[in-house]
Image (tube, one colour):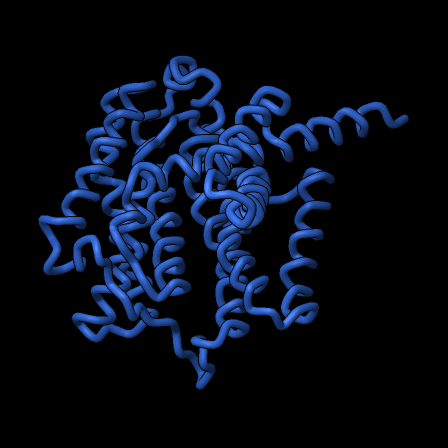
Amino acid sequence: MITRPFDLAVSVLVGATVIALPFATQNDFFLNLALLVMIWSIFALGFDLVFGSLGMVSFGHASFLGMGGYILAIFTQRYGWSFEASMVAAVAAAALLAWIVSFFALRVSGIFFALVTLSLSQLLYILADSKLREWTGGADGMAGVTRPQLFGVDFFATQPFYWYVAALFTLVVAGVAMFRASPFGRVMQSIAQNEIRTEQLGYNVHRIKQITFLVSGGISGLAGALLGSLLMFVNPQMLHWTTSGDVIIMTLLGGAGTLWGPVGGVILFEVLKEWLSGQTQYWYGLLGMVFILATIFFPKGFLGEARRLAARVQRRKP
């Protein structure tokens, strides 16, 4: 669980902000921006289980995000499933896809692992964009993705949907925190530091990677379903490798391998994107410059460096 003072302080700050925001403003722009941040944070937290905890760079996580979005859209629109049942199917399908991908991707490591995951992601992108157009809508995507309807509450309104996503965001943060702090999570960190020694200690490294990949894929699928529901639209761009690139940048900006680092990176990325895109059409290039400077001056990410400084200050206390 969350035991470090720094993580606890950030947890309280984030929790207070999430609770207070709907009372502080009725502006849908800010609430929708907060919704985007929470959903992308779920995606980043899932991705960081592989990237930050295992030390493996995946360019294929967009495929799990897109799978979640498309399964929700297809099952609710074509088969008439309820939102809740379709959400479970979306998470399960993304986890299953991650498990299948792991059979191929985990045979290699390093840059070859990144290339395999990128190739598989692009394969799904091409299928969704053209070969499976009848099911996915092709480049036009699928509009009219639904939102949940529980206990007579209209989640199509922004505020109720905000609380729905906030609850799932809280569950994911708590789940990832417990997962990282568990004996399994400590073995994951050992693999990232020294895979050979971990294997020599008797751990089945391949199986641990597979399980982590499966959990990571399921969380990413949840984010994809929520993103499709928020936008009420899914399209092949969700599957594209550049979407994986975005979540890599977000995670590095905040700090990989930490609980709140990916969330902080998402906040910084989304706020900068909203501001810069209103200033110039070349906003993505400016965002790239920010990322380059951040990796030079803050190699552990903004929150990673803040956490390190907080730990140093605490050690100096008598």
